[in-house]
Image: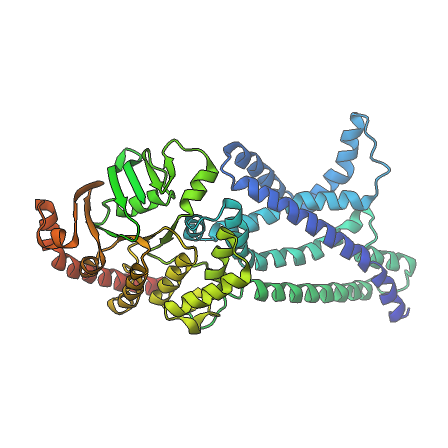
Length: 229
Length: 267
């Protein structure tokens, strides 16, 4: 077998993997902001309802949730006469991960949000900022650098967990590796998996570089030198 | 110009302000003195509407907010006629010194950014910190941070600046820097309400001194009347003990700090 041919085939799975990571992360992140907003809004019932969702989602292995959404949801909706069979696998996958990350990331964002000192909010209000101005100009800019390292870790986590998609037959990077092995059954599966691993490694390095950059940029005030306090 | 009418504030069952009346004329410097925990800070916060009073009203010029006022616009408008300087400075950590002065002007007053920047440069010059424009607050000493926070308040051109023990967290040297700046501010003719434990400064700067205790105004009058000719027994007692009180209190703070450091070392 040719190693170039192997990489060529593996790389055809990368766009699928990247598409999956990007959409689930962006949508999951958006959902997690809504969840966080609900959790810090002082509505007790909303806090509790979302608490149950977060607890449930974070306690169940992602692969099980994937199965529930991919196999369970269509079966359930069919009972009500809604047929989902025309919808592609990828949508179910993204759906399952968005639900998962919506809960997961909110537990990263919420503590970061709450870590912003009450006196900072008070100063803004006392000077005549509206609540919205206080949030957007003061609180959120101080939340971001605190949340970023953990959010970055979750992206990398997502890269790894995306490999689970091949279990339900999505042909991503991992799926391509699997296909390559079955098409060329003479070749060494270990070498194929190893090469796929190298590509995952590269993806992770690139992503963590981007996250580090964002951390530096948003957290300048945290890393300012010459702290006199 | 500013009028506080029979303000009552309770935290749970504890009455912190027990019907306070106060009026401040244009350009007047009013100093609140009295034991800690007596309601000075709560009074300032009630004037700024950070705390909403349970009874009574606050008026600045023709704008009045009572305990029953629900209109958010009105509350915001009144609040924007005041500016607060906090004990712990509370500069915005995510903004450079200069942006701490620019942003409130832009956000609160709708000034365009260039004008706000020019004003901020002027104000930094006025408080003697021109060289620190591009530093972050965390890089400054406490006294410097407090001067920036005064500049931030001045940028808003408030009718009245509320100083909440602005030097209590500072050593005497840094306090002096800040007090000099407050004096400058007073000289510009802006109205000031100042809660402080700096008696000598209060005597120097004030037009009116108010001695508060347990949520009540015990005595008020000119600095001369309060500091040298107090009528009320309690006022005299407080002022008489004051020098001792300060020095032992400061020692206590030092000890607390030392203990804190030792404790942190253990952790």
